[in-house]
Length: 263
Image (cartoon, rainbow, N blue to C red; front, side):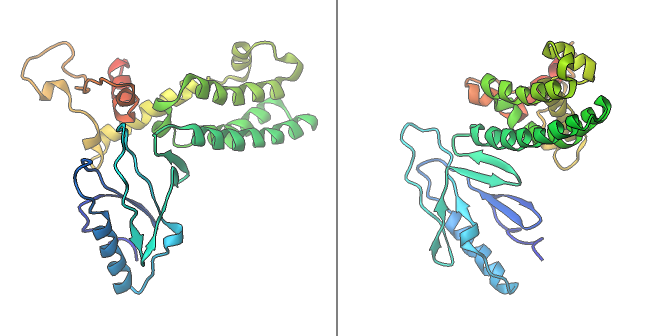
C-alpha cells in the first residue's frame, strides 16, 4: 500500500514499512520546498483512500549557523506540524544538534532495568554460564542497538556510562569472585562494550562495501582516482575533515577504521 509513497519526490526520503522521513537540504537563503512535497504526499494519500495523521508527524531543523534561519513550519491537512528538538526514528533518538544524550540515556535506562533480572536469577543460584548467556542475549543488545549510527559521535563520558552497564553485570554474575573489571571480562569471556561497538561498526562498513544498493556510501579507493600503483592504493580516499563533527560522521569514522584495519 505504501511502497509508492513519496516515490517521485526530489527530496531524500527514508522509508521503512509505514515509517516515512523526508529530508530537505538547502542553503539558508534558498526557499524551502518541503511544503510542496507534503502537499503531493497528501494528494497521494487521498488517491489511495488514506489519510495522513498530522498528530503523528513532526518537523525538525538541523543548523549549525550562529544565527539559524527562521524555520517555516510545514503543514499537513492545514495543521501546523509540531517542531521538535528530538525525533525518534526506528528506535533511535535523533537530536537537532546531532548529539546523542537522549539516545544514550534511553539505552541506559532499559539496560540497567534488565539487570534486575540478573540479580533475581543470581539469587536462585543459576550457573555462571547461563547468567552470561542471559546478559549477552537480553541486556547487552539494549546497549548496542544501531551502534554504527551513534558510536562515532559518543563522548568519553557517554562511552564510560555504557561500559558501566557491563561492569555492573559482571559484579552481579561473579559476586564475591569479582575483583577488577579486566579480570572479570576474562573470567566471563567478554569483550569491552567499546571494542564490540568498534567491531560492529567495522562489520557494518564491510557490508556496505559488498552492497550494490549502498556501495555509493563508501568512499572510492585511491586506485580508482589515480593511475599510480602506490602502497596505499587499495585504501579508501577519505575526505579530510576540518571539524570534529565531520570526523565523527559515521561514514568518515568507519572508512578510517577500515583503512587502519589489517583487512
